[in-house]
Amino acid sequence: MPCSVCGKAGHNIRTCPFVKEVKSFEEEDESPPDQWFYGELTEPVKDIDTLTNIMVDGIQKFKKYLQVSELEEDCDTKELGSTIDLWFEHDSSRNNYFDNIVKEDEFSKFCDDIISKAFNDK
Ligand SMILES: [Zn+2]
Image 1 (spheres, helix red, strand yellow):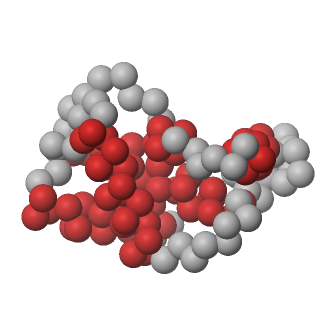
Image 2 (tube, rainbow, N blue to C red):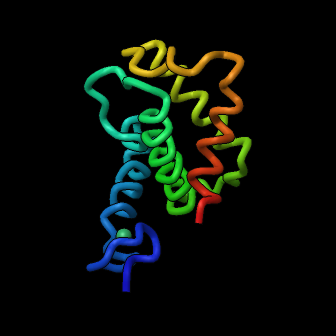
């Protein structure tokens, strides 16, 4: 039976590598870095479709993180949007790999797209 947390086979919730990673962040009293969620980027993202895929994976991992961690925060849609917003903000002050891809006035639509792709496409 696949793991109920990450969906991969070969282990259960107590031996899940994802859960272990989350716990190790907690023991250090740290929040995972943004790129732990959406993946390491080494060059600017080339278009909005690519960015959408990156953010969908990232936000799914973020939601799982909330579920596994002891933060027990509510993860409603609004909160997830503000997380994406934060990732963009951080990116703009670091590498600017994707902050300029989404226009200011299209940002909330972009977030809605990510969230519906991440959690409603079944
Ligand atoms: Zn697992």
